[in-house]
Length: 130
Image (cartoon, rainbow, N blue to C red):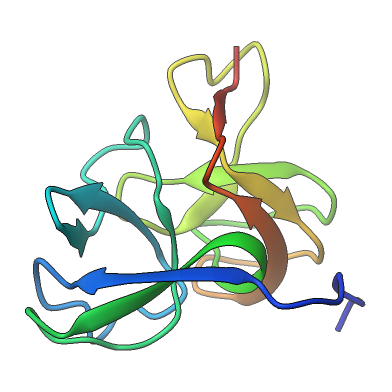
């Protein structure tokens, strides 16, 4: 495992707007006063889910700081990442993924979809990969 930044991440909590029990370490977005899964790669991510809440149960989400994320595909350590259409982390390439948000950086590599890797996210001020 790669060394990750020290310090506590910034975590916020809102009720899960849907069953997220199988989505720990996925990106989520805010929908009103709840957290739900993204429905497209261009959705604005609110953070990375830390627990496994059922609908209506508080969802704990890392907005800024170190976290684990589930990869959507192979990811190279050090690349910029954001959400895929289903909430998994995928690579964001500035100038190519212009309608998608960069929400962090992969701190270690993923060999395939479903791998859990360390990342540092900043979903408080994500930017488009323009």
